[in-house]
Every structure is written in structure tokens, then in C-alpha cells.
Length: 174
Image 1 (cartoon, rainbow, N blue to C red):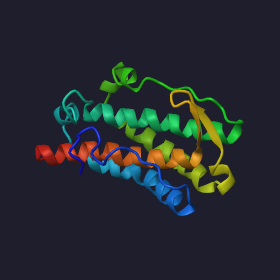
Image 2 (tube, one colour):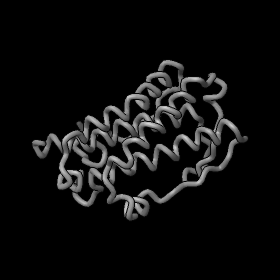
Image 3 (cartoon, rainbow, N blue to C red):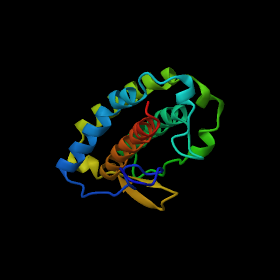
Image 4 (cartoon, rainbow, N blue to C red):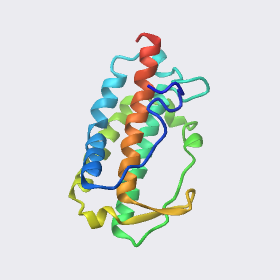
């Protein structure tokens, strides 16, 4: 574990976009719904409303954020597959985390994550090497990103947020 509570598994570092690395990243994305459910299993509302780090999001916000982020991720994949290097729409994650739906029970977002991941993984596993090289432009980064790169980033994102929750549980003795 990383000592920086913001990055319990360390910051994202992209690897080479090979079939083996991409396949392993898709496996991580596929496993996320079950891993996230296991990470939050048995938590009380008080525990769900605990920040994973000082001035960080609560566990509840993390779960809802994963749903928001991964819905956007699947849409970005589909845009890259169906349009010629589209410019995607970024969103303000911090502002979204302050909206009223972030106070809902996590049982609202967990099924969304299940469905999004099932559909997203189905698409990802069907892609050819050429399709994995298709791109979208992320205006905040000012460059085109391949679907293969995106897959690695979201695999990291899966592990990153599960680790926020599991590290908090370990620190708190939950």
C-alpha cells in the first residue's frame, strides 16, 4: 500500500498496449462489481458516510462516483468506436460528488455498476487490435487517447477506488 491516502495503489502509469496487458485490464474491469460489493459489504450508514481520507470523499460518494465515472467510460468507448476521433465531454467529478444523489443508498449505484460493467466488458472483449487503437480526444488532456490506454486507466481506477475503501476498513478495524 502507498502511504499517500489519495493514491493507495500509487498514481496511474500506463503500460504498453499489448493484447496481454489489455486483456488483463479488461479482466480487472470485469471483476470490479464483485470486488466493490465485497469492499462495502456489511458497512453501516455511519461507515458509508466516513471519508476515506481527511477532506476526501465518503465511501458512499466513492461508490456513486464509480457509477458516474464508469458510465462515462463506457460512453467514451462507444463514441470512439462509432465516430472519428470524437472530442469527449469532460465533467467536474468534485461538483458531481456534491449533488443530492450522492446521499442515496449505495444500493442505487451498485446495480448500475453491474449493468454498465457487463455491457462494457462485452464490448471490450469483442474489440480487434485495430479497434483498440481507435481514439477519442480528451480536451482536459489536450490529446487523443486510444481505447487501449483508456482500458488500462479504468482498470487502475477500479483498483484505486476499491483500495480507498479496503484501506479505510483496515485502518478503522472494520
